[in-house]
Length: 119
Image (cartoon, rainbow, N blue to C red; front, top):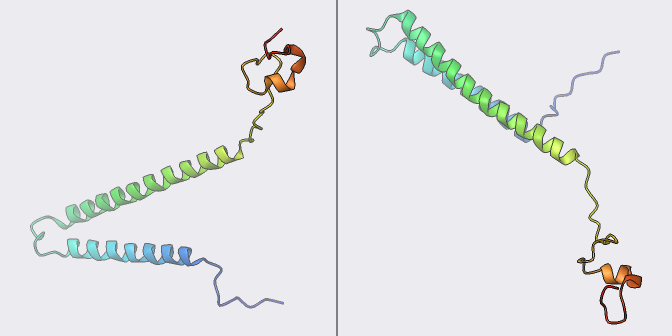
């Protein structure tokens, strides 16, 4: 028995926004490419060169987007790795040799005389 597909997608509103933005950007690039390829101003430039130039521009745009995505991904991995580190318990208790610690006198009173000086 097959279950019917839900009409509601499980995408978040931010995900829907990103999909719409990517679709609009793709349409914008297609419009730009069509206007450049069929431009009367660039009629003196051979069609093959115009097409090659547009492909180069699209590759540059793709590399720019990919580099930003790469650095964001590296940053997220670094943030995840930093968050996965164990939290060190701050030890406010002084060691026996830490005589300069302000709590040392109260933890080790046997090391001090009645005037508060070390023996």
